[in-house]
Image 1 (cartoon, rainbow, N blue to C red):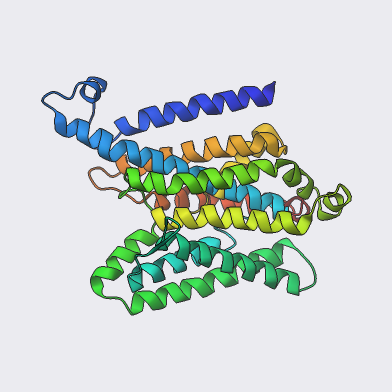
Image 2 (image 1 turned 90 degrees about the vertical axis):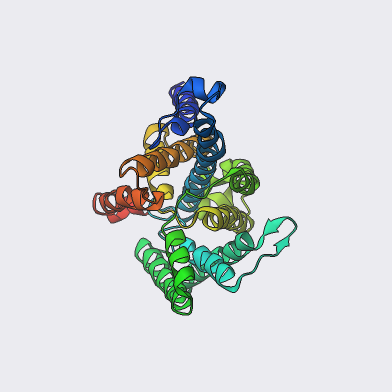
Length: 331
């Protein structure tokens, strides 16, 4: 009953955040103006064409990031394991940056080239980190984080190389994009994110039971009939798909995948049947709230939302790292 009550509260909170966020900004928009534009068509246009799609895009992106973090934490049995801390965002960022730099504008099966490039970069990064850790012969938190940092630095250096070979205008555009933001979001951005978020969420939802078993250890999962190899690859695919789409549309946005699942775990326990919908709702609401802060804290200027999540997530990461013993980090 407690878990259901928490989920109902998250549903109500998410709806409330989505309903209120479009009204927040440097220009006040009243409810009457939205329903009956009249003489203030400009305010209504800002609301429906800019703020509403921005809130929808932020919700979908936050949900994808939170679900990706939750999946990695169960897979690696480590609360510090997220696509961002393991360098997956850097790999996806490099793929998208290279695509933008080379001017690739093709699409495959309706998927834009930037999403495909970010997905390939994310998959390569996941394989590199996992391969490095397993090549040492033992799986530990320290090796996992060190491998993630090393791969992240490698892809970051490649991004720097792309910057160096770009012109001034491209450099500014790429730097702004790498900060992670929702400023250019419209309905097409939300539509591009929606199928990847929905597809990744459905894949993880079907694997909720397997996630519960993997979180307790691979040996127990194997003894219960779980195909660990196939489940692992499916989780990698779903996470890379969601992370790549978010990076391609919004740029790299960090620490959502580490903060939201941890808070949901504190409130709901370790059952992924409840953690998955809770992380989906809380992740979306968290990023929309962070974007509202980014839009209003320095009005009329606007701060990229990736800066806000980093300011919140950095201390949280240190608290999580320093506040737990090594045994608590190795589930």
